[in-house]
Image (cartoon, rainbow, N blue to C red):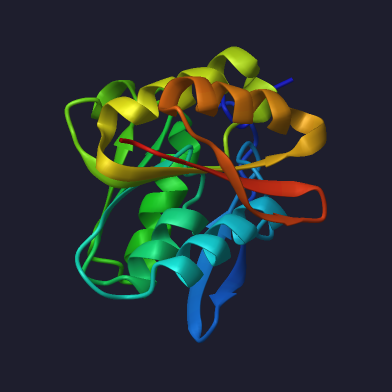
Length: 202
């Protein structure tokens, strides 16, 4: 069985579109088989977008990294709402990246760039103010923890890692791992079993 974190081009393609809103901002997004949350924004990603953007309204330039971007709802909405910021979006899934590229172009998002990357391997030479991730739980704890470990390497001083994760899918262990890595970890939002965890780089 193919999961969305695999780079597997053999899953049958059958695209469908939907509109995603944050306040008055709209994205028209295409999704497909073989990509996480086909056909609609998943609750966790929407909670992460809402929590982040509510706390970080348009203002000074921010550098944002969306890890495991999928077809792009998190990174593209952040880029649309924060036009002076730079958003980098990474994923290992080529179909997801193709969708994200098409979604970026069709929504005329100029301030985002896409990179193929296994976790953060291909962006370790860059620096960001924020790392946002709805991590690929089905890829296993080792992958999730690798994303958390690599995040501190790319964050600037004072930079923040925000993670959305369900309690039943490993929130307590992820929170402990973030505490071990950053020396701090807190729950800043929770809804319907989903938690937004935040760590700040000293």
